Length: 384
Ligand SMILES: NC(=O)c1ccc[n+]([C@@H]2O[C@H](COP(=O)([O-])OP(=O)(O)OC[C@H]3O[C@@H](n4cnc5c(N)ncnc54)[C@H](O)[C@@H]3O)[C@@H](O)[C@H]2O)c1
Image (cartoon, protein in one colour):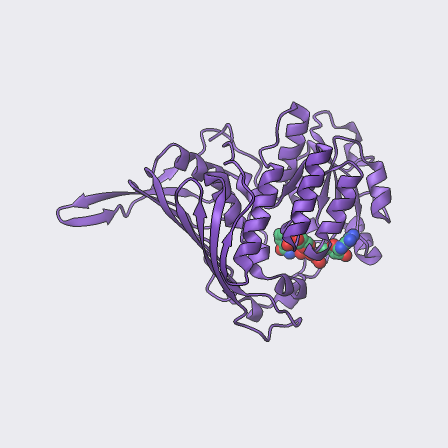
């Protein structure tokens, strides 16, 4: 049962903090399912500008609704976090309103559709001393943190090259008209195709790479719309292939598409072998290390991998939904923990801006982009 302010949750003892949701569509259900695994987080209230969607969502989850964003914001205290789960075209205006009202913001990705808007939000949050963090949460998940920890410990030696695939399969032929969230929101295919798979999904690996290595200084990207007759009249690239050059040395190749067969592998090639995760959309995915060695005159990557594990219990896991097993509440939980403990959030404002600037460069237009923003690598979790 969800923990809802003024309803189920009023008697909870262990309270980490409170969140409010703006946008009650497809992904909001995944957040509610994830938040159910975090009874220490209370949902104060929710808002959607579509009254019918708001009513359906509230009926399903038994949450307090607010008919306007202003009314929702008026309910919040200084240590509450707003989750901006609206469509990408609404992200800027909603996040801006929340920050201007003095509230911390967790935004679904992409943070904004324009770099100037991302800079404006970042600067506003900094000026007000507020947190502005961007999805995905999966960078805080077990697979990501174990991988980052293994790279930091030098398990694969010096990392030289990273190959990351974010191919989702031939989605325009998928039966997406039948995809519905738990409370009945249709998968917003027209919006997804219009925004483009790179803006929608590159963050699932890019956030890991930025957390691992810090700033990207240069992107060389090639992107194209290779399926121009998708439903919904979309005109965003449905494939991008890019190289990313990190300040700390390694180079990465990142591929995003809704064309090539499903492949969400991330491989880090280092001096002593290969670290790999087969499915970055699974928080519990195995992190494997294939040692490289020579046998007589042959160079071999060991066919049997060593599995690298967390040192202790990591975080609550959620069940599989579609192609993903991800806890969407990890980011908001980190923000609330930072507030409760009086420490800096591991998902920094600088990271949100950097992730957005690099993602926009990957999306195109094709070419070379020198990246202006900078951000430090992320501290790994204590359980790694
Ligand atoms: N669909 C997925 O599987 C998925 C997964 C992870 C992340 N996301 C991200 O989540 C975000 C939302 O996607 P979705 O699939 O839930 O879309 P959706 O269209 O199903 O839901 C978005 C909701 O936001 C509401 N909304 C839009 N603008 C608003 C505003 N200004 N004020 C109040 N409500 C507003 C809409 O009415 C809608 O109900 C996007 O950024 C998307 O990239 C989606």
